[in-house]
Length: 231
Image (cartoon, rainbow, N blue to C red; front, side, top):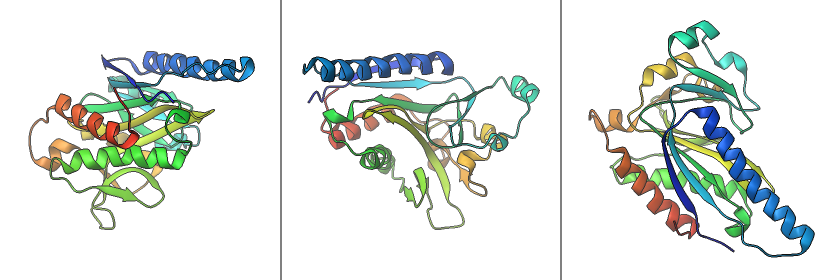
């Protein structure tokens, strides 16, 4: 089992080209697994973790409802945003500047073969990271992601998640609002859930800006511990 993960920080990168790059890495792992099975070889499969920040974009998961996007094509253009329907789970979400997006492209057979556990570990890495800033967060029953104020009238989502997996290989991942412009969330029904607010780390801390590189380092530390991995 190869528990080494290749870390790549793509900086600010267009959503579509990042998606295509994910697909390329994903396919490479799947193809190697098929080859191993066909040729009865045991070549180690690689794992990747991509950090990226996207320009303003809305993405709709395969089970999502297009009506959760509250903008027309012209209004999208006016806001400098793009829209894509994609092959992850989940409904609609927003990506943009000030948001840390993480795409783990892992062969889970290198770690554990349990998608539910994988999602819970992704959430836990974020929950532990937020705890380092004195922010208490948690899970909301039936709603993937990380939330604040669960069970209160002030419940608000700080991290969205949507994953695709095939042959135990994962892609897509999480989007943590650190310094994101919350106004862009007003144009969607986030994750198809009405009446739930969205928040960011800098708003919760009452500061103008949080150091995103510091947040990334904390996420990686907790991810490493949870997955017993090595970057």
